[in-house]
Image 1 (cartoon, rainbow, N blue to C red):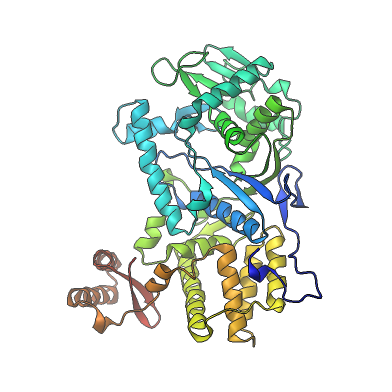
Image 2: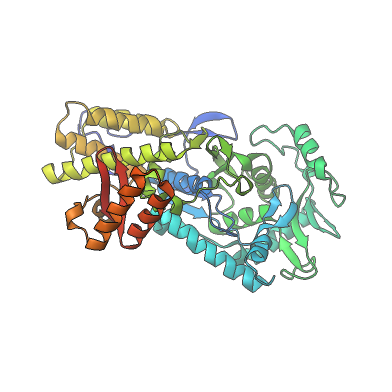
Length: 486
């Protein structure tokens, strides 16, 4: 267990409070008790890699990383899996529309082949990895299976469901018969009559019932061979099959966005529990949506924001992680540029305090007066806003520098904010203008002239030119702040 989680008194209980999470399955906050004493098996729904992932998708990666870090701090051994969907995810979760990977191939002018689909997927998987690296997600602790590497397991699971009478074949493919699973919709206590009406908007004549979902989609031109002919496994079956293969038939935690609850995750439960006859997931954790300027993130609205957009403005990508944590994961959060700039200022201030305290005292002291309240906030369904507020209050208190350093050290280790990262620290070292190369000094002067003239488009262009030369510019009340790029 991390040292700061122990209260330094032999006369008191040194264990942290029990973790409690809101379980979507029960609708209640429950004490977390894993299936195995100290091992936690966790699956996080990952990206469909047909394009660059926007910041809404980044909340998923950061959330999973924070859950793992907290579990590890509480001395659990975590086995974490994030799937990479590289085929089969239709534009509608209810098995309607075009396959997203096919859409990506057409968009990028690539021939529709399985080989090209894999090339496209790996290209955008690497983009995804680069983004989550910037957000402090520790990929060394996570497995990232590609769905297309587990075709045999998906076929085997579909055959099991067929043999047990839960599946039926049509000319369109193989479907799961929801009528055979009486507790369908138990996750989130879904109103099935309302869900049926929603599905009927685009009624599928191939289905026996409107809520039945596809397990294998037939395709005469593209796909893999199977007992049902050429085609693809459905999107829902991939998660269940990979969980069975990598984590086992029962797992402790499954995470995802609230949009996954009505269909995708209820389908996973139906598949898994029909196949095994056992409860599939002990605790389901779901995070809410991110909006942009009060609107749903949508390419059609032109309001999509990516991690590189934040970096391009001279803001720290880890400030986005900090901003995520300032809202509870079960609350929606509204992204604005004013909000992320404020988060960047706050994040950098905490980071500078950490570095200042480290220079002054060398080692942190984890005071019980801070540790216990912080633990209690984290243990209370990951109340990250309260935990962060406690750190701010403590840094303003009359505690010693060693104890304040301890509070920041605890925040960093628990939430992965990168304070101890040497590269992050280097970026916070402000460079005096006189110490910059002459060409950068001239660009800064030109940019300041553009800003004074309110030619902000030109100012942004010059900021980009400065960035290409290896420096970031952040405008502050005291003038521009220059730091070296990583």
